[in-house]
Image 1 (cartoon, rainbow, N blue to C red):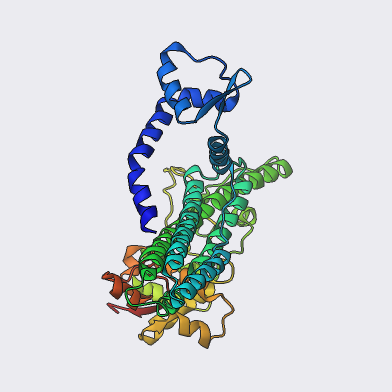
Image 2: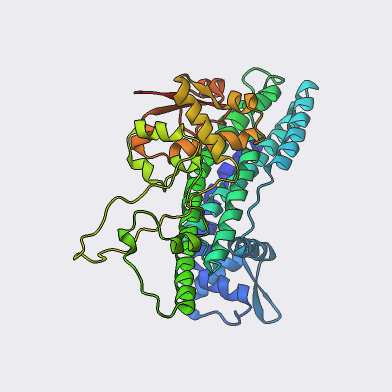
Length: 430
């Protein structure tokens, strides 16, 4: 192991010179990769000599070709950049990692220290591979947000891709939560004191996965907001289609001042394909007008069986005309069947005035949600609240406290800083 480290240190300058040559010879390399390098321009003869000496370029049958290893690397980079596939199967790699660790421990217990050192390098490389895959998956999801799923054109296709991305993100949550501090410590406790496994598995792997989980939480919120925007665009299109059909069937129809109505016109309701009354879980949705009300009103609305769609009380002067287009409420974000349960959880906290454990609530009520998804949804639900409402709640994110103490971290209760085990919700200022 030590000789391997010395070899890496001694090769640092060589690697720098090699990368510098690749940078200077970028035009020659790309031409050779494309199969179009037949002559070497005189002004690039010196860099060509360096590349040839480093076995980057070689001459075969009158043409200059790239080293096959470099060609394979470029093929990998191109395939990776053009691929929309996101690798999420980290659990299978965890099983492989377990087998390698057990092999390391067997060598240690047999006194085969040299073999154990070699396997330790394999363990470290495997954790790098897992970390790279996790970071790449999170980056790929973030990139789709930046481009707004630019690889598809229609809004409906974007909605499909958006929903698929949310599904991928939730599956990543499953994979991240499979890597637990308790599981890693079972191996570390079998090794000698001051085991190098702790630095590799806990300080390294688990810490990086916790960072990925924090980034993933932000991405999930952005994906859901984007999904609401896409659905809103479909909503607007449906309204235009409804008007077009209405005009076609009623040639004498005259538009009305819809902004002067106390309730949405039937035409809008039919176009949006929603019922005039919403369900209780819309009360705490970011699109709801109730977000701008006081907490006391919010609490009273949460405790009602059904919350009606807010009515418009403002009217236009008879001479004012229609200054602005009528406000069309965006389609509510419905997180499958989990939002009503999330609302009930926060309602429970409000009504009892006592701290509520999200994990215990899930178990006591026999909810069918996957625990890791449930905790992630509770955290996202809390983070989605606007500041004027969130200030009345306090969420304590419970993770691997011992893990943070050993690392010397503060362990602040912020979602994503820990591999979550529970979330305790309490009220403040009520």
